[in-house]
Image 1 (cartoon, rainbow, N blue to C red):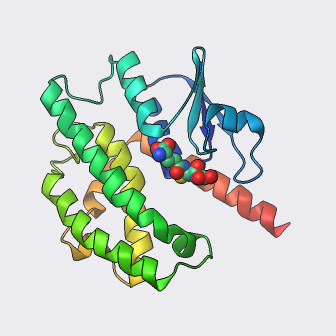
Image 2 (image 1 turned 90 degrees about the vertical axis):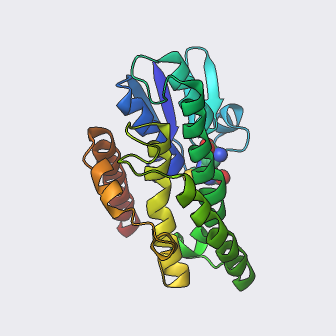
Image 3 (image 1 turned 90 degrees about the horizontal axis):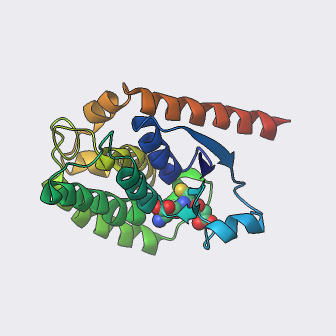
Length: 219
Ligand SMILES: N[C@@H](CCC(=O)N[C@@H](CS)C(=O)NCC(=O)O)C(=O)O
């Protein structure tokens, strides 16, 4: 049995969870605290980041590595095309989503979501990168109807986890949704993904955990 470790507020955790659900693999979940993580977390994930998995063969961290391992070990529900070139194109798009969008916009999260502050210098630097990287992503993305083409792939799990955060963070920090500003209307695409049972389960679990955290904070 696979144990997915992390928390439901994490976009990377939810990406892996969607892949597990899409593949209809049995798994358990283990909640990892935000702070004061026990040594067992660092033993599995040296930077203390989530998600990571516990498996009968050992532990593994880095969400995309986990997704690739799930794909290779359970090819019966494929989330990558059979053709190596087409599969590489899906990986190319996933890399753009995570490296050139998520990792860039992540620098805004402290202020956009967690009540912290981000310097004007960082905001300007991130803005400049996003103004370059979003059109680059647009060039590769297909939305036909899935982000890499006709089939749901690993790239959709990444896009579902990232695009709403990009919209929310840039709206809060710059007063405009930079995806929309660069001509990407992700709403119909995200609505379509929202109809999938895998996504509905992830959204419901996140809502449950957010409400429980709110209730605990009010106590
Ligand atoms: N490249 C990593 C990124 C994971 C990541 O940044 N996770 C965040 C939660 S979304 C985290 O654990 N942050 C806490 C920390 O860095 O201590 C992956 O794909 O798994």
